[in-house]
Structure formats: C-alpha cells, structure tokens
Length: 175
Length: 175
Image 1 (cartoon, rainbow over the protein chains, first blue to last red):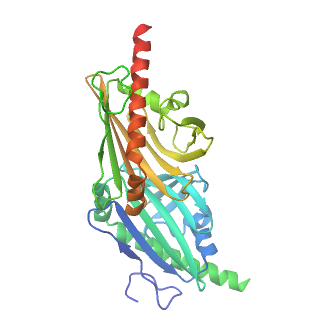
Image 2: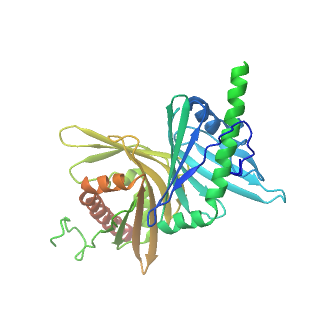
Image 3: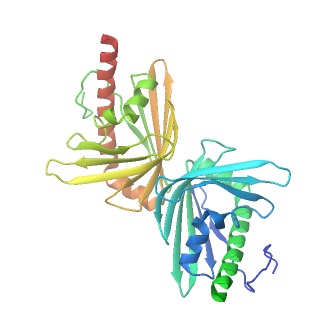
C-alpha cells in the first residue's frame, strides 16, 4: 500500500484515473468502488455523509447549503488547521437517483470561473463505476484547474469516499 | 440587405459570428448591437421581452418559468404552426446585471444532454458586444448541436433581438 491512502479496509485499493486531453475543455475522472450504486449515490448526496469525504484529509468541510434537486444550490466551506476558509458553490441542473447528477461548480476564490459537472454511476456485479466529466468555460480554465493540483485533492477525496463506503457496507451487514 | 433579416431599422445590419474549433467542447457566438448594455441585458432577461426574439420567426415562444437569479430555473416552450411543441429548460448559476449570466441549457427532446452558457455583454461608445460561450458535456454533443442547424436558428434570434432593441430605443427616445 503505497498509494497514499490510509489503507483502511481494502487490501487492493482502486486508483482514481483521469483523462485530460490537451486542447479540450474537459477533465474526465473515473473510479471503481466496491459498493452498490445506491450506497455510492447516498454517500455523495446526503449532507450528513458528504462532509466525511469531500476534500483533502487535512481540511474540514462543512455544508452551508445542499439542496439536491434541479434548481437547488449547494455551498461547502473548507477550513484548514490555521483557520483559513475556502468556499465552493454550485447549482443542480439534473438529479436522477441513483445514476446521474449534473451541476455547476465554482471556487469562490476565483469568482466567475464556473465548471459544469456530470456525475454518472454504473453498477455491475455489486461494484460501482463512477465517471465524473467536468467541462470548463475555456481551455485556459481547464488547464488552470489541472495546474492547481486538482488531481491530488480529488484522488484523496475519492480514497476517503472508498473508506466511508467500506464502513457503511460493514454497518449495513452488521444490522 | 441580403443577410436574411427583415431589414427593419438598421441600414447596416450586423452579422452574428461563430467560432467552432474542431475537437473542442465549445461554441462561441458574437454579435454587435447598436444599443446600450442595460437595454440588451433587459431584453434578454425580462420574461415579457424574451418571447419577442427567442427562437426562429416561424415559431412562437412562451415562457413557462423564468426566475433570473442564481438557482432560479427557466423553461421556454416553442410551438410551430402545426401545433408541435418543443421545450427547453435550464438553471441560472450566476446573474450579474448588466454584464454576465451563466446558466445551463437542455432541449427536452434530447433529455440529459446539457450545455453551460456564459453570456457576456461589453459596452463601448453606446454599442454592446454580446459574447455567448456554450460548452457541452462532450465534443460529440457539441458537434451534434452544430449539425442540427443551430447557427441558422440562433442567428435568426439575434436578428430579432436587434430589431426589438431598435424598437425599444425608438420608444425610449420618443418619451
């Protein structure tokens, strides 16, 4: 286990993969989870669960707003150990449980730079493949996001989500 | 005047221009209007005015919903002379009068295919330059929109908007 995760639960931790074609507006992120689709969808859309995995491990995330329906808004605030705050917000365009969410995404530290995210969950043999396509307003915005270290941060989020899903699956089996 | 417009008002009708780079997710549309920015913004965001220019001339447009604020939804219905209906909807992410609107766009005849639109209005010397950047979820979706004859339809909308602005400017001078 040298992939940077804590190694909780899974002996063979999956990797988060990215497709970032030069000269396009898009980032495609893919991750396989050892959990059913309904559970992955719930972990991603329940305000009480999202704070357990959203963002890097050294920041705490609180949900300011999270109204998961078309036209609903979301706003998350991250705090680092020094007390600095970073906020993000967006609007849901489409919510189709348990398979699809389309929403917008803006980091308030760079106001006016907006991405549109399409989350798709596919289930096969009890596992769930997550595909998130983000398109940016310009190729420059996309490249800026890549250069900001986005991959490290979102891979850490995906690892934390995998750990949460392992715990939730264990709880559900224990019941 | 052989540019397909009715030629009302303007002796030198501006053209709507498009940048559609191969292999990208984007369509950029540009148009110059002989009207102040506040008026262009109003014509584009007032439900009572938008029906006068949105869509081709041979269709009538009605506003089902149009709540122009972040998180607000819009839904327009077009009817052709035979009574067929075509509906479109989206959600506003950002509304910054009179210069910027970011929203999503979906044709209900192709559900789940969503674009994000960024409208920017710049004023100089009493004229207004409109730039609308649309990014699609995939290059295929973008190419499909281009092949659907989008340019003809949206150029007709832009011509109708120019005519409406000419009328509104005349009314405002007459007062």
